[in-house]
Amino acid sequence: MTVTWLRRCYMALVAFFLAAPLAVVAGVSVNEKKTLLFPPRGFSLEWYTAIFTEPEWRGALIASLGLAALSAALAVIVALPLSWFFWRRVAPWARVFQVLGVAPFMLPPVITALGFLSFWATGGFYGAPWTAVISHAIFFVTLPLVTISLGFSSIDRSLVEAAATMGADDRTVFRTVVAPLIAPYMVSGFAFAFVLSLNEYIVAYMTVGFTMETLPVKIFNALRYGYTPTMASVSIFFVAIAVLAVGLVARYGDLPKLMGAWTGEER
Image 1 (cartoon, rainbow, N blue to C red):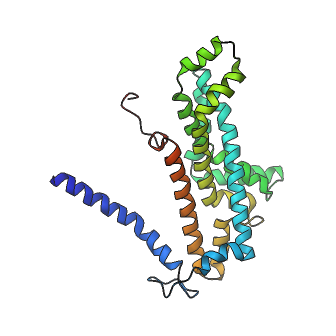
Image 2 (cartoon, helix red, strand yellow):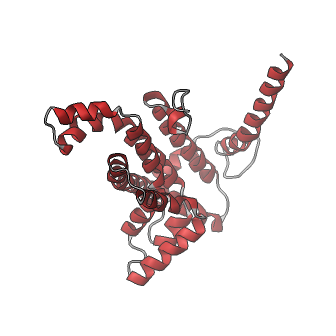
Image 3 (cartoon, rainbow, N blue to C red):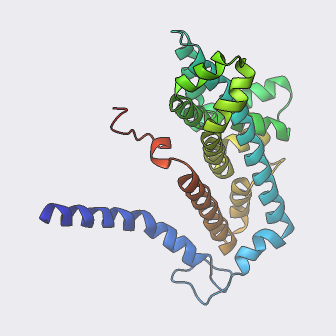
């Protein structure tokens, strides 16, 4: 009983430690006046509406959503055939491609961003919006690669063998058997990559500079002119999108397994 009580107290302290900064930011975002004060002075949602009504913030929001959606989709498109190949063709050298897929996410973001900067500047494409899409897709391809690989590992191979026995070729097997089974894992990989791309700053800044302002870049630029509650409201907006995405994954997918947990049979 004592151990259980201490464990619950410890987890409560950890939860409070993690949630306290978010509570402060949320309080700052509803200040009635243009000031960063906590506890808030008055209550106003004006700074949230500014994200959608002010042209500069709305443009940054559209740029961020477009970049996140396109890069996440491209990451899934790249990860899907790789995961399919790793699952169908067991070869020692296949691990090399898996390591290459994970490498960008394991390196420090600054190192990866500098690599992208050098590459695009050398090719003469620095500042083009599509370079940020490709860079983010490469940087976050690890997420759909892991989730889709987990999806393939959960497939009963006897189903594929039965479909092949009935005369189905690889394309038919993938369309009718494999794709429906791994669809939740593809959506999960897209959601994770989308959320992280939406919040990412350093790679976007290194690839497009200020030619395309995403919300994180816009916040950095706005800091030069002072602090406003709009920055706090954007932060809460990011958190809300992340909670929504992870909540949908938890509702319609196997979130514990996607996060690395294994059942007793798999250990």
